[in-house]
Image (tube, rainbow, N blue to C red):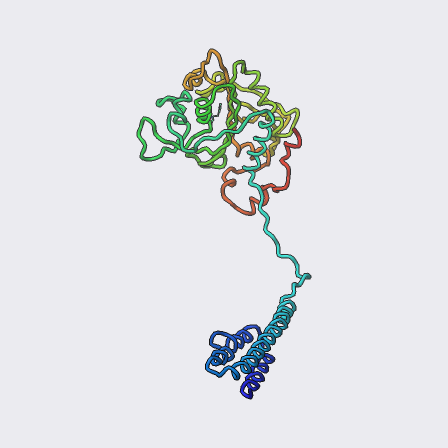
Length: 356
Ligand code: PHE
């Protein structure tokens, strides 16, 4: 009994003085764990005679409960005080100024594509896509540009190594091959636009080896030049947000359209200053024409039944004109100061959607 009293006071003092949850756990294991001191004493009960065992058993049980309760009680207060200590130590200083958040913006190319797609989308064109790596047939031959055609030289094509001469792979020089892919896959009526990357081996203030175009293609039974003109005049005026923007069609040549035209918009150039709108000068902005019957035939569409019109415009050029960007190469230099200056807020509605 004396032994137990000594053990009790030793353990209770240890519990009282314990500094934290870890220490309490150590005390619990050393007294009540499998190899603990109280557990050891309980194991010794078996060797006692029944009389002594009963008495010692009761005393040991009482001690065990007392110690266990004392540890639990102390654990609770320790946990509370540890939490209190953390809460005071880690208090948030709400008076600190907020950290500046860097905000991205929309690249003028993405913005311009969005605007073009929004306008033509309103005219019920749907968006189609095709691969950047094309074969010679889709990029040239099917578009009525045979191997010895001079137009091939004008395209400054990037040819991919390792492909045979007959059907070489190229980086597409325009989005027009998607006209072919669409006509091969779907039957008229067709009404698509194709925004995408295009490639030509060229580099100066108005050319970059990678640039963007938007192609348009309409094929139906009664499509005619009046539809082409109406659609593009409407488009130009919506894009430049000018209801009375002068637009003219000038005869031109593309192997895949017949007749072909280039579209000019009115502008003024005075003393180095350039302005879109009324004036005595013209600026070329896109190529277009009625789909050449040979191209329809190449895609197994009967030219006696169907006609179509097509157009292609350069996104960088449109963006440069609309937003006054003087050098095309800067689009792809990733200069953050340039991007912040010419970029668009992600929360701003594209101007023409509001105007449509
Ligand atoms: N593919 C032509 C180019 O890249 C543009 C164009 C497309 C012209 C469709 C007429 C019809 O220059």
